[in-house]
Length: 280
Image (cartoon, rainbow, N blue to C red; front, side, top):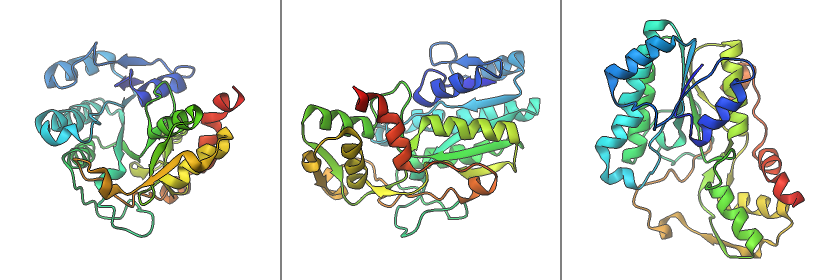
């Protein structure tokens, strides 16, 4: 198993999940420059993996608005290189996308059949990556969102939890709906797909259900035994973010469940993630 972006939040989790069962080759930003197309192709040929798991991503949503070449290189053309390498070796490609490919104007969870309508440079680059991934006949593109867990404690859920633990004010959107994704559950679902090999293609891979960030904050407060009064409801439009965010970003896992893998509810995922801090 070749993991690109192995030092990142999801990459580390995937490496830990796959290492007990597979030989894992880890590529990090320090060891391989993924934007060097020919070198990457040669290195993949040398490794000759059965699967390439691409956890690399340019994910600074606001900075991407002014850094278009870099974000297109990482989120689009790197995927093309890895997909073509996978096709040459008849390897499986696993690639991760995002809820940002949607406009956020829906009123029911998005499915894989809903038409994307990206509204930021970052979102456009991730949709380009989805298209590029199809150069590998045997591919899984998994849309995730609001990732939390693993070695990274910089997620929105961590920010809210740390503020509540410190007794500080925690701003939360009352009008942005999300389906949070626990990296441990995403890694388990990815391992299932690699093992069971259901139909290749596009899947949504988030914890089941959806909520506003205010509702997520209330669940975090409940898990930590902290008062909700520290939560400060704010509106997306009042945050003055440089890049547009999909306001309604709930995703449906029905296709993944039909393939044989049911993602746990987001409440259960948050409880499992926060359990060590709750005990402390």
